[in-house]
Amino acid sequence: MQKEFPFASLDFPGVSVLRPQQIGGEKSPIDVSEEHVYRLIDSGDLQAIDISRRNGIASEDSLGRSKRTHLRIPRESWHAWLLSRLTAPFDPLHKQLTTDQLRQHTQDCLRELQKRGVRI
Image (cartoon, rainbow, N blue to C red; front, side, top):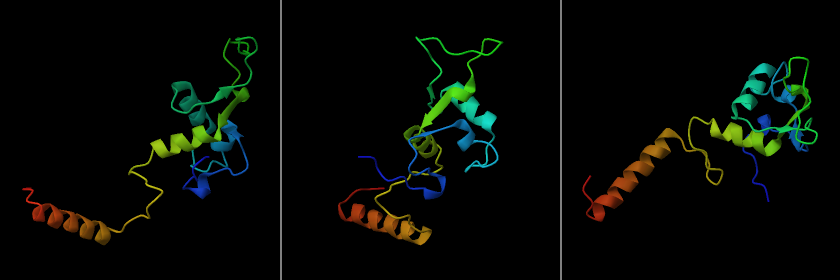
């Protein structure tokens, strides 16, 4: 069972694979170019499926490059890439804490450690 994706505004519900044009370009949910998406795929940062391969050989253009229009990105790969770019840990089981709540939690932890005789 797939976990619920925490960012509904960046999701594509009901779709199992995405085209690079859906992630990049004018309607990009993260405001990146289509070319940037291709660079992420080429670098291996974003996993995609090359559906143009036939018998282990990719369809190529006149310069011998794989035709990029035949790439599909599994939705799970899109989710994994987004989550790997978060600037802070995300725990879907807990709501996001405010600064005051974090401060209080830290103070509570310090008091508990002091009770147990731990020197800090």
